[in-house]
Image 1: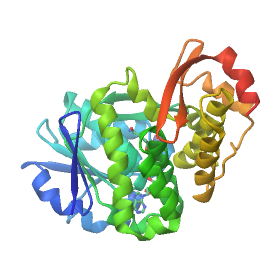
Image 2 (image 1 turned 180 degrees about the vertical axis):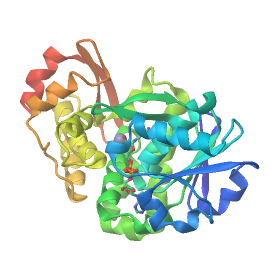
Image 3 (image 1 turned 90 degrees about the vertical axis):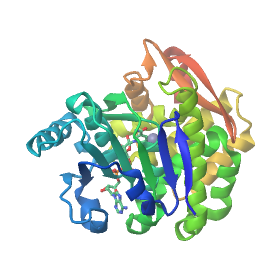
Image 4 (image 1 turned 60 degrees about the horizontal axis):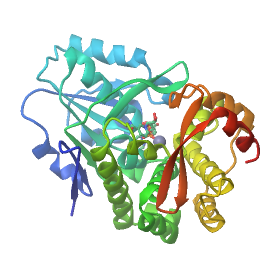
Length: 340
Ligand SMILES: NC(=O)c1ccc[n+]([C@@H]2O[C@H](COP(=O)([O-])OP(=O)(O)OC[C@H]3O[C@@H](n4cnc5c(N)ncnc54)[C@H](O)[C@@H]3O)[C@@H](O)[C@H]2O)c1
Ligand SMILES: [Zn+2]
């Protein structure tokens, strides 16, 4: 059985054996597909004899040059404003698809088949699309909702173990932000259990999407509550800027532990809850320490786009299943970070 959820009243997310619903979701008329080379190679069945536009995989390709290349190819193929752009891939493909579709001829309709766990639980949901610039993540982008997102967990059968683990970090994040039952489900099922139990994996995706959909529907443009979805990300983006050792999900895992440590230092989070968060991150097989000294992370954080002047919005857990947003000055933050 598949589950259907709505984001902001106009974007439909289908989770479960959702690929079967693609024919009903796709509009009549011209469709162009965008994917990356790995997905094209591993899942030729998704392209049904069509010739998709293909980008090279890797975060280093999530940049304006790829956007230009895709737009040029759309022009060459004669795509017009009625063309529907279907992104088939992980977060990099869906971020580029949403951005290209939003600016090509001032906007064409689009949707996604999300093929990674990280994409299912986070990147494909919520309508933030964009690319990196000069090492700064997601600096150039727009808010635009896809018409639909298909989250079919059967596609994870080809996903490298490292990518499954990375996606789980975002699901743990959702649990800490606002769904203790999701956190507990991941705790009791464990990494191997989740990888091999479709029903449990579907539940992780549904719960993560439900939490994100609810928050985004209340605050689509990130004026307030949506910032909670950045839990762990201020640290994660700094880690990604300073080192190539970790992928996004791995950096988020460390970021979650750092946010929990900081919240406990500030007296916001009981130490038992901090231990529970660090314990789950470790049990899932993540490293809990940043790959570079915190002083380097601090430098990168002062340049984070989420900072406003000399302050930064930090999301801090107050329990497993609850968090607050605190505006902190860099002067306050520097000694706190040194003590982590
Ligand atoms: N827009 C948002 O709100 C949002 C939220 C979270 C993350 N993101 C972005 O998402 C990106 C990370 O997403 P990701 O982890 O999906 O990365 P990704 O798109 O790079 O996919 C990870 C790797 O898995 C491969 N792959 C994809 N599907 C596969 C499958 N089914 N089987 C085998 N291999 C497959 C890809 O080719 C790639 O090598 C980052 O750029 C991050 O900034 C965006
Ligand atoms: Zn993320």
